[in-house]
Image (tube, rainbow, N blue to C red; front, side):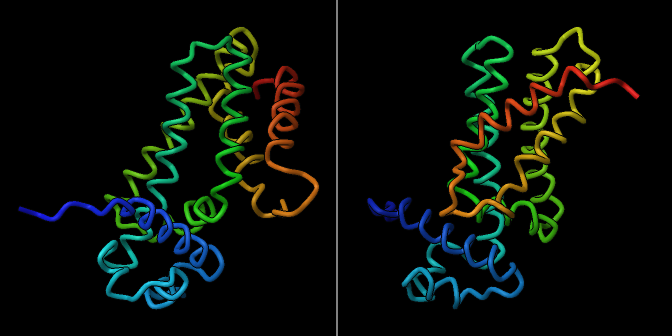
Length: 199
């Protein structure tokens, strides 16, 4: 009979992913070694290999677990049957909140997904597309008769342009928090969206 996972296995796994994401975000995927990940985690290299067979598996897990959480929140909000504007505002609030605790993983997803093997990259990008589609539907539902509805996907990408790069300029100890920024992003988006005209 195989030995089951220890009680703290999942916590240890999350801790390793968090430290690896931090190192990849700071140093880059190729410049980070498994020795450095083990040292950052306070683990022996042998223990690290018990959780992840190699550095590549760390990259896959960081990228996929991050985008899976984004995908899950889109599904969760869609199931709540909120009024269209409230649904879009809640999507913005939740995704900005998710980014607040996952800036390193998000940076890895944005910058290092190109290092994934084709099958892994397509699976991760497929989940990203699901997130984009969820937001695009929410925009189209919020403005069904406006010209913006015809541009729901490009508008979604513009919205993500505001959100996705916040990690490059927001300081963790700055006056503005992600919680404070979420309604600002929503207000900016809603305030301007009806002025959009189809080219």
